[in-house]
Length: 81
Image (cartoon, rainbow, N blue to C red; front, side, top):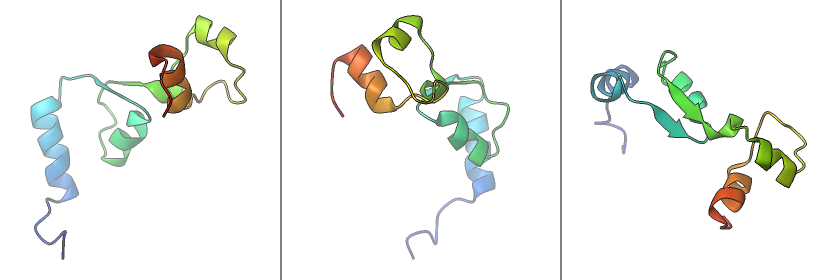
């Protein structure tokens, strides 16, 4: 019922291309979201894969390619989520 008048995936994809096509998307795991929408060619900066030499010294990561958002927030914003 809630989705009866919702736009289709194709409509959402075209809306994003039309209004944000030349933008850089920045977010946590945003590459996965864009890929899910079929926007494989959109440029993004994904904090899930963020690397920083100082950060590596601060934390011992089990998976060095995948950073947790709560850890990045703790390091760079001195906040807890």
